[in-house]
Structure formats: structure tokens, C-alpha cells
Length: 115
Image: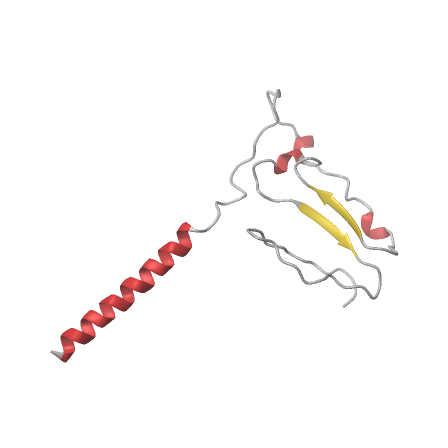
């Protein structure tokens, strides 16, 4: 009798684990690198559509206040439909990025200089 109880408990535990994993999978976002939306009134997409040059040279400048250089779908149309945007935040020496959160979004930070 005890063996049946252990088997049914194990089956229940495996079922709960499987359901929890499947719910996590369903909640994930689609692959953002799978497709892009071509601009309206344009028959073909050229290389300039995938090129964004506004961030060239921003790291050669020193800053005395926090500056943000961004690339959203307004500035960089290939991001349309991707659900992503790019931003470079430059902080002056001795400053910090204040704690914050993004609902339904993530942030990737890359520190180039400093601590």
C-alpha cells in the first residue's frame, strides 16, 4: 500500500513540475531576431535600412552630466516590430545609475570604463 502512495506522489510531483515548466514556456516572448517589418511604400530593403550611424563617436567625448543617445524605431526603422530599443547612457565621474525597473522589459548594461 505504501508503494502505491509513493508512486502516486511521485506522479503528482512530476505532473506539477511539467505543468510549471510548460507555463513558463508559454509566457516567454517570441524570438526577436526572427523577422523585421519593411518600411511602408518601399518595394525593396537596402543596406541603409539596417545601418544606424548616430552613435558613432559618442565614446570619444567626455561628459559633465548624464547624457542619453537613443535608437528607437523612430530613429532606426529596422527596430519596428522587434520590441527592442537601444540606448547609450553616459554618466560623469562619481555618478550612479539609480535603481529602477522595467515592466515587461529587460536591460543589458555594458560598462566600458570606471567601476
